[in-house]
Length: 151
Image (cartoon, rainbow, N blue to C red; front, side, top):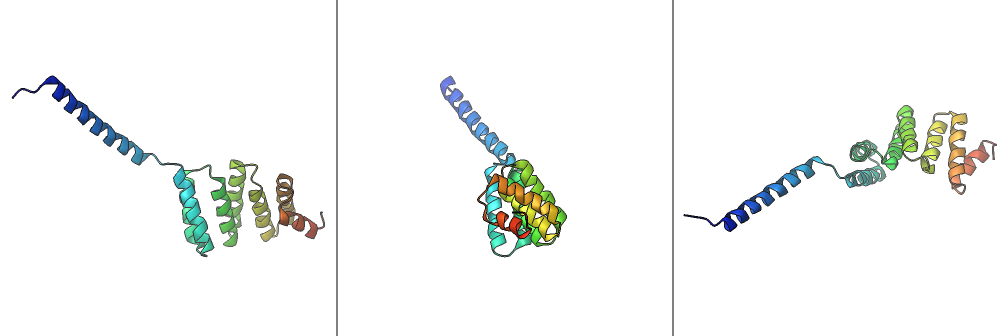
């Protein structure tokens, strides 16, 4: 049984396309879309609202595995660690949030709250002031400075 070259080349082409698609899917399974970071971040926020901080921490860490530049995930890690009384981890996480996005006034504010919770008032005031410089109308920062007699 003889096959025509056109039919044979069409079958080879089709096989190459199928193999190519399979290889593409295999490659996609090893690459991680950055959007997954945002998804895990949002899941962490929902868990935090449901008063499940340990589970929220897990999802924030997953978010950072997918997108290490996600400053808001570092920020939330800092907030959760502060709530658990783990001030060193809170400071480290909030500092990473600032490193990733120096214009993020919330991170400066939350770092000030962490230092205040740890009774390190001079450091707290430094970060409250930085938050106020970045966002002059931020409501709580002015009150913290006023309470300390600095505003």
